[in-house]
Length: 375
Image 1 (cartoon, rainbow, N blue to C red):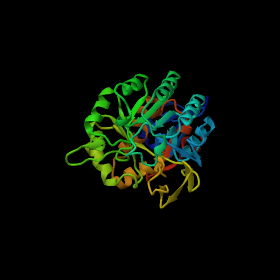
Image 2: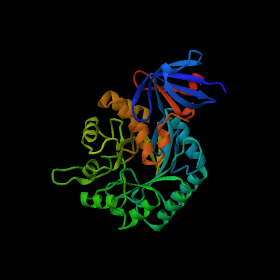
Image 3: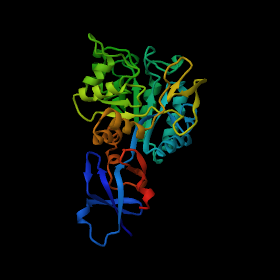
Image 4: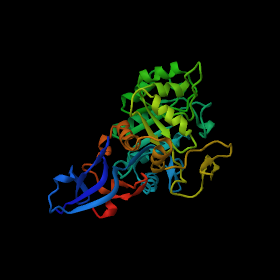
């Protein structure tokens, strides 16, 4: 087999940025990683200007390419959404179904079973309907309900098939013991869309919740006499997703939260992307037309209805606008999401397809993949 050695200016290995590394590629797959100074003179070498990194992972993707999962609850719909985001450097997603009728969740779960193993589809994120009415955001009030046996059985079935599951619930919508039941399946229980107290949050974390959904958004705020869900999240050692588009959360608050969290590398990027990413400027949600106005997705109530942002744009914003160290920003888009869903190999270079390895330019924006250089 012919081996090509790719020699980028910098390599993100899942933890740090490394200078002077060479990557052996054979038949489109990375076989080895060694210092460039150890390459033999006869090696077939290709120098790459920029930074090589594993592709981005997004654990909250409602749609893309004009496809919305709730209205196209099929394996083909999931594949189309994943393909739309891959164009922007996101190589793996959790397709996300939001609050809807019970039969929609049934259909999405069946689609996730059918889509198991398809490129770019990492599992399923169930966001609602077991959330707070007060903090529902754009989720339809008529479908919100307490966590029930029907959803628990769906999660059990998906986990029995070894499909990664994240499920967002509000503490107000679960009964004692239900979070423990979900966590026992291996699902990632994420707290979000909640208006509850810090004491209630703490009880849910003690029961097995390990994550928070889009920090700051759709959760009770920090006040001087009450930490709320927001303060409880920041003070915790749990993982937390974060939308970084300059709209959902101010850049100053993102910087504050990242400084304040007690354990490093627990906050990760999500897009919360809607069908407009890689698609047109509008889509239908619950029969209501959502339009993209000044980069904001707005419903008829004037509320934000998901986000129009890519992981690539979010990484660049973290670095250029918020001033986050590039290695930390890449961990937030690659390493931490992989850890959340117990897929650590997705944050490594070895044994990866060159199609899943990105090349970032000097401005930290995606310029292509390693497959594009003919490796």
